[in-house]
Length: 301
Image 1 (tube, rainbow, N blue to C red):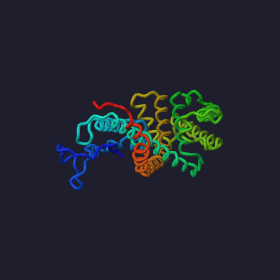
Image 2 (cartoon, rainbow, N blue to C red):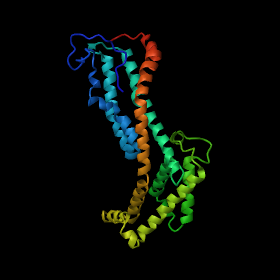
Image 3 (cartoon, rainbow, N blue to C red):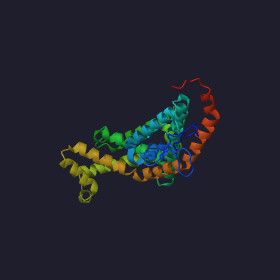
């Protein structure tokens, strides 16, 4: 995806085997060589994997941004093998990298993930994977805030409060759309079906909490109870241990859906890479932005 923009075809006598293609005799950008070039794709891969790895995806932006910075600086400083600083050439490459390596590929990944999210509507719950994920995130926050303990013995009130929080967070009752929620595209989900899923989610958590605190023989042989006992033995209080198990239980329900969304992200990225490169380089820059940038009266330094 990473290509030099607006560079000359002139090769001087300082060219070596690293910058000249032996087969064609043309300039070969060292930054295009693997495995270095792979750094340019790390953020895109990270964003495709975000449903599975969460905020660890942020780390994948580090090598990508370092590579992009190096590439933009290289195009500013060098005209292929010739040392010839040029701010206009640098600006073109920065625009190319910003669009073709950051904004548009990430947008393609999100579109793919949101599109595959609709497969959730074919499940028994009949709501998108994005909506299921959002309900689960609200549940995790509900647990973290101690709401489960606060409503101990008040199952009906607990269910009503949780469903109300889900509705409020998804803004079913608010005409004003949030950018975050609109981008997740769960406004196409049926409110009643989301409510049913939310009710089922909180009832499962309520029951699991009861089973952990007053386990029967079946619960004592389960992995969840083993995790609960392990948490207690590690020094956690009963309340904290219950919270950690309930949170892990809720997260485990998202694995299948997140895997499906990840596949969607990779498919969209694979389909979009070449069209994005062609559009940004040959249409947007070569035909429209490039000629305007070339008119800038910027002195070479």
